[in-house]
Image (tube, rainbow over all chains, first blue to last red; front, side, top):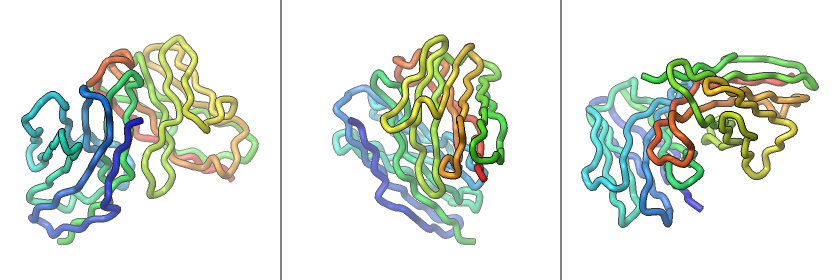
Length: 114
Length: 119
C-alpha cells in the first residue's frame, strides 16, 4: 500500500524568507502523481503544485517549487519569499493506481512571522 | 476552473437525527466523487468512493449503514449521516474527479467542506 510521510508537524519561517517542507512516500507503482495542498483556517483545500512522476523536471508555480527525487521517493516543497498569507496547513498527497483517490500525509503547519 | 459546491457549510443537529450533505460539480461531469473526514489538526481520511450509478466503495472501518452515499447523477453526490451521535462531529469534505477513477492524473476538485456538530 502507498504511504505518505510528512515528518515536520510544524514549521516556522520569517516573512520574505524561504522554507522547505519535507515529504516522502512509498509506492511500488511507476506511474503516479504527487501534489501539495494548502489548507488555510477556512479549511478549503487549495492545490499548490502538482508533479507527474514521469517528468524529470521539477514543477514550479511562481514562488512555489518542488524538489522531486524519484529514486529517493522524496517530494519537498520550497516556498520562496514567504508571505503572511502562506500560513496554513500543507498536505503532501499521492495519487495513482486503480483507486484514483488521494493519499494524504499528516500535514505540516506553517507559521509565517512578520 | 472547475468548481465543486458543498452544502451546507455548517450544520448542528441533535443526537439521533440524520443529516444530509450535498456535493455538486457545477461545471463538469464528476464520474467519481470522494468523501473525506477530517478531525481537528489531523489529515483527511478517505471514507468512501462513489461512482455515478453504482454503489459506493467504503474504506475499512467506515460503517456503510451509518454513512449513506448516493451518487445518482454526474453532478451530485450526497452523504447522509444517519442517527448521528456526538462522535460523528467532524469536518467532512468531498472531492470530484473529471474522469473515470482509473485514469491517472485526473484533477481532483474539492468542496469547501461541511462542519458537522452533533449535540
